[in-house]
Length: 202
Ligand code: CO
Image (tube, rainbow, N blue to C red; front, side):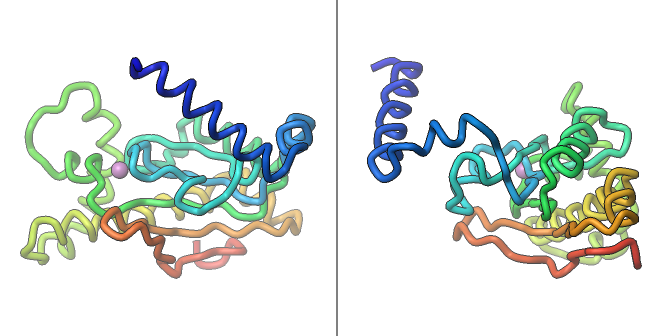
């Protein structure tokens, strides 16, 4: 079976399995989506939002890019946040990083990666902001992992500083922004304990 045929075969099996447990699942979901969560995560194939949270189609609105960056001039990311908050009325925005992130690792390297270096500049800024702390860590992979955490902290701050989120809070909407990090080695999500439900301290 070809690589592409595998996708169709797996898809048929998957749809059948869902229909077996809930015959109306797809019909109901085709009428509307009503997710509670917006997930902003890394594009890494090992961190698929629905699978690692055990949630079904319709449960999470998703934006992914290399190293889960929220750049406040990125019209793509901002449009996703706006639609999720204003049209879908999601209650939780989750920025999820992961340990061992290749994007974060590349941002700390001095070599040329081509076009992608423009994107990695976002991570490099986080590194420069926390340079003293990161450089004080001896072990290279621990250094990267700490930057993975600090990157989530910074991106949560960016989400909270968008007009979209501020407007939602000002109008009294129930909206929380969370920072999570995922362990590739054990499949476990960790809460970084930086959740925000109001503009205070942002
Ligand atoms: Co990554």
